[in-house]
Image 1 (cartoon, rainbow, N blue to C red):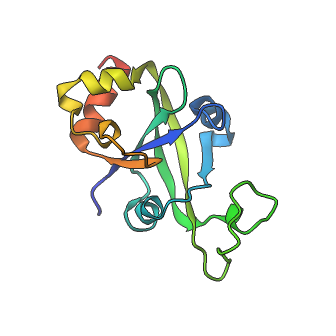
Image 2: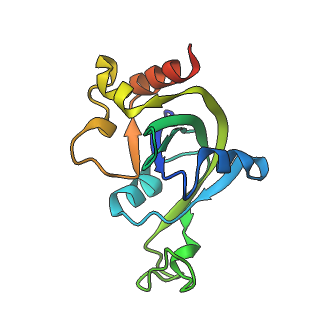
Length: 158
């Protein structure tokens, strides 16, 4: 069995918040609209059912990890790329040769308190986290087991 991996998923709460995820049927949603090849490759090659997700609110005040989710469906073609009426339409992506993928995620729990970007930056245990690297703008980023454990501890008071 593959080792469990961990990810940080960024979302603007005005577009899709952790509360939106938790309000979904079975707290499950398709993570669509990714239009970055490196992130697509993470989805295609690395994400497996059971992987953990830190849900991060970007473009918000405060910028923070607000909850935990997990992968419940491995990658498959992102149908929003095929529909001209969709915001994420890509005329170069075709059903017979899809350029873009999505995964299914399920919300697990909201943190007792948000773990802010500032707090992450100031924590020596998180100094190598990709989130704090200058120029790192990927909407999905890998997280190490140690980073996962520290952020979970901060967010849950554990």
